[in-house]
Length: 453
Image (tube, rainbow, N blue to C red; front, side, top):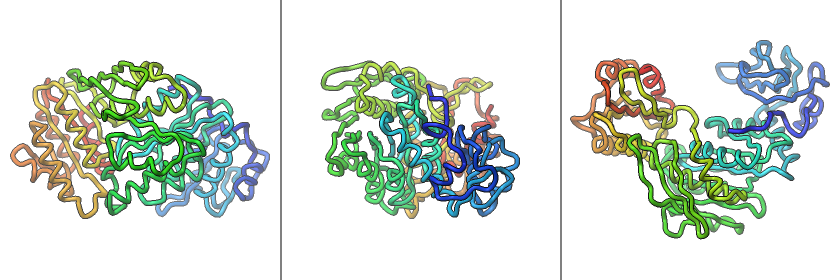
């Protein structure tokens, strides 16, 4: 992925200028200049950078200012480094990002992506598409909240042509808040699923929240909507601007056709519009990635990038870590590490992918899917039934995921923790096996994947 040389905005800013932008005061040398990225982790600070010090319940970032390589601090109290002191650090960070990007809008196209699943993968694919047309800054990993979005915005500078932002939400109003910082020129809505339904309470509430991205479009901005999801298609009514759709449906503006998978579950397919078609050989695992690629290509069209150009770029794509990572273990087994996060829909997609990969035995290692609210037990049981139909063995980790094992029946083996699951896998995995690791982030099943080598 090509990214512009990172700086704070159009030009370096002094602490005095930053303080004026965010309504703070400077302790220390106000002439100190910030010209490198802002960071939340003191260990990631760079010379010329800004360390954003947050005071949490357990850790106070201000205490680590002396150990960072960053040049200055944005915090709520003075530190050993020159510091812009404000009452509300997150609000100041957001204000700084909004005002910095506002200076760049004349030549900057902002593309935002949301959805219940697939956000990060689609953002990664979108970044590849956009980077071929100009310097692009995109969200790192899944830094998609009220802190991650402004940190990404602050990596844009005068050379940046495209800003690709992943926007997530846990509550109604979260995305509206983010679009208040920067109104996207192109808004991509992937789906309305069950992720965080325990927080939202219903799919209707999730749909309202995802729709905030369309409502937040800049004047004349384009909505890119999933033609296969009725809740997403209904978001046409939320904008008077142009709409492009993607999907497998016949009426989709960018349509996925003729999809086939190779023995490792990698998709090859045709993207077709009313006036063009292009074949894509996606180097990613899973049929569902074809839909994400169509979303990225549709957003590319909205940004003026021809379909064939996007298709060529997509054939070189890669994803953020722990998302459908495929590798061969020392024992000869194949590991499909999709451990970053999970919900019922994404887990079924991962199980579909497991079933599509050629192997001797297919083993699904599944942990808890969190934030499902009152439906948690029923959703875990439904995934257990699905897993039993798609895997030869189902290893279930943790008490919360126990209903998966109950529903999977004779194919299931239950383990109390990650260490026990990893030890069992070490004993039973042999050449030709394929093993999927999938759970919500809180289950930390990446530990199991890491333990396998």
